[in-house]
Image 1 (cartoon, chains in turn brown, yellow):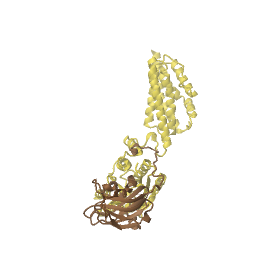
Image 2 (cartoon, rainbow over the protein chains, first blue to last red):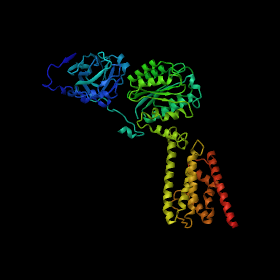
Image 3 (cartoon, helix red, strand yellow):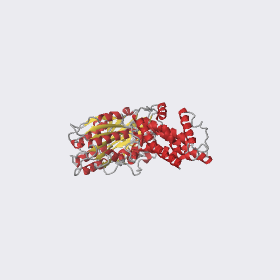
Image 4 (tube, one colour):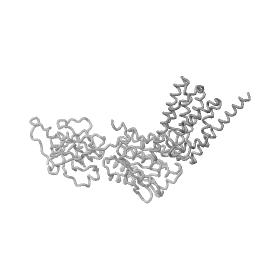
Amino acid sequence: MACMHDHSCEDHDCSSDWSLYKHIDLPKVSALNEAIPGSVKSVFKAWEERLLSSGDNLESNEGDPELLVYIPFTSDVKIKGISIIGGANGTSPSKMRAFINREGIDFSDAQSMQAVQEWDLVENFQGVLEYQTRYSKFQSVANITLHFPESFGGDTTQIQYIGFKGEATKLKRDVVATIVYEITPNPSDHK
Amino acid sequence: MVLEATMICIDNSEWMRNGDYAPSRFQAQADAVNLICGAKTQSNPENTVGVLTMAGKGVRVLVTPTSDLSKILACMHGLEIGGEMNLAAGIQVAQLALKHRQNKKQQQRIIVFAGSPVKHDKKVLELIGKKLKKNSVALDIVDFGEEDDGKPEKLEALLATVNNNDSSHIVHVPSGPNALSDVLISTPIFTGDGEGGSGFAAAAAAAAAGGVSGFEFGVDPNLDPELALALRVSMEEERARQEAAAKKAAEEAAKQEKGGEHPSGSQDATMTENTPPEAENKKNDLTDEENALLQQALAMSMDDPSTGHDLRDTDMSEAAVDDPDLALALQLSVQDSTKDSTSQQTDMSKLLADQSFVSSILASLPGVDPNDPSVKDLLASMQSQSEPQEKKSEDKPPKEEDK
């Protein structure tokens, strides 16, 4: 299911294909079992910058390579392909399972539920590998949850970059995103 | 104001019968639980809190996470003490209850009251801790009651495995004169990770620290927020009025004109304003604050008439525009002062001593029943205050007459 780029990227601009990162609702991205809370946000960037690691990758906790990443989009998208750059020394994830449009999945749910699609990953440090999706199932994705159950033998799982290829529609799923009650307003909430 | 779902794990084992925390460990725990529930729901209206018991016949969820405080308070009644606490099972059931919370956007938190000895191994606790951390559940531990060998270490180890970025806390509360809830108020369990805390927690902490066992005016702002608000507003209004009156008195003491009347006018208002809050106060005691205010007011009426009394100006329309009773009172005070300057000190007290006058004022006020025992007590105490003063002034005139 993986396809290799058989052309050099100077000829045509691959980055425009991988532009779905612009439609990710970054503040609401969350991950379970990450060692540093909030580090998951750093893995979503432009395709050109995929190899630039700013130092904080997404890393799972010591001794436990399972990772669960929840990615909401700002509008419904169609996903054609996913690209993952893992870490060195066996810390790349070896499997990936995707769940669509389900919120609040935790590890026990992820392990027992049937995923929409599963992939076996290979170590891919250049980010040129793309994992295709069964496009018919990924037609209107408001949020996607990626579950990485194992790594290539490493103690932890590291992810440097996650890229999505596809199209964004202009449709939005929820009109009311968050409700804030201000019965007793607290200025520190509005910083 | 983090959006949070909390499960509180209560220890209702046999060890909770002990009385080393007043009145009993179990009661102290119940008070702490009530306070925590209040703090959580106040800090964010969408927060939910649930309760489960760890001992007894087995781990039992009393209330699933809800934002309805009355449900939580109700379930704390009629809890039975017995059995042994099962910490591991309790935490796991709490985690399950949180997993099925209705609003998935809420952060998950478990608060454990560990009062009896912990029979699990450190290893078991660490495994549980890892699972909690993996699912990003925060854990607060209140270590009180039995001081077993190794219990603090086990709990600290559990906290270390769960702790993610300082979101989990442990508090060791030794038995002593301070109530469990008072000790907890100042901890991060209440104040919520130093985000600035909730106003409730801060107010309760200030009240506890100030030595007042409760809140302003003896009324719990949570149980009766409207009453507390009304009391606070009337107190502030009174202060503002007194300040305005004092300002005017200062201005006109310079001119020496009208100075004495306004303080005495506001004096009356002070008296009447003070009595309704006191009458409504179901706790039926004159708190120190109000006594002090009363003394202050009396002192004011003592001082000022001595300054600008020679130039009596009967133009009191401003002060008495709304209240005919007030006008009457003012006139009385004026007349008495013009008669006898030495007995001016007893003007106020005479007026107050005139029970029929005072009760007529009280009757005209809404919500005050002159036959209320608390009002009668108040009048009696005011009379007894005015009596020694009357005696004093009566001693003076005879002395002067003698001379």
